Image (cartoon, rainbow, N blue to C red; front, side, top):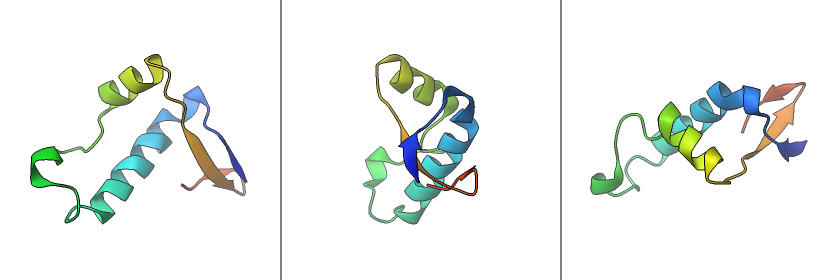
Length: 64
């Protein structure tokens, strides 16, 4: 099921975003790459700015 991510899933959101970025490490321009690709502070800023995250859930677990 695809659904909007909850506020209490920030840890899972970060893990998914950073795993996806790692999969595209050689595609993301070197001047845009940093570790971690998205940190907790950046995620907080994005959410505060109105970005809404949606995810894929299966069996009660956020997977993507």
